[in-house]
Amino acid sequence: MALEHAILVSLAERSASGYDLARRFDASIGHFWKASHQQIYKVLGRMEGDGQVASVVVPQDGRPDKKVYEITDAGREELARFTTRPAPVEPLRSAFAVKLRALPFGDAGAIVQDARERRRAHEEQLAYYAESAARFYPDPEHLGDDEIGGWLVLRGGILAEEAGIAWCDEILQRLAER
Image (cartoon, rainbow, N blue to C red; front, side):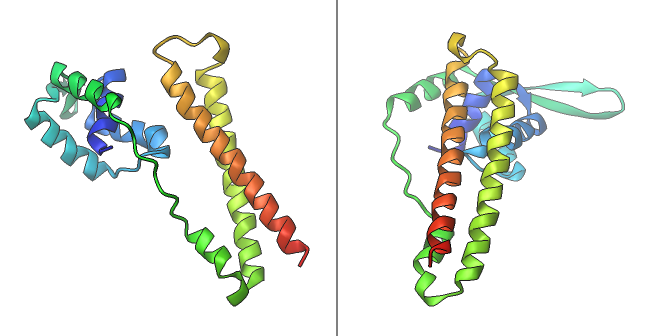
């Protein structure tokens, strides 16, 4: 997957300025696909040149005009093509896992502290996801067709954070037994 596809999804859901799109990434898509604001603006320019998005200039009182982007038919076709290709399984890449493998050679107390901090971070992210679920999907048993994808992504995040907490608990328990 490329950043282009994440942008196409976001614009298919709702047109946005580059700034609003970057904020949307910070609030939601960025939890599973990272991109800097500069990357988003650069890719938007390229996508506009490729005809996947179009923009209109919107005048603003007392502020510079802004460009609002929307997905084009070509962008929707690319997004549809993207959904037909299998997504590769992303390999786990974790500095923390390497640190755990180094346990016999390092500072067990520091690793325990890291596991505690990691657990706290998982709890905070889980609370954020739970709040989002309550706010945006108060009745998950009755989701509309336009909501199911977002809900499933959010559920994946919730499950990942729960697994992260369980893993940290297991690490802390096992290291406390030593």
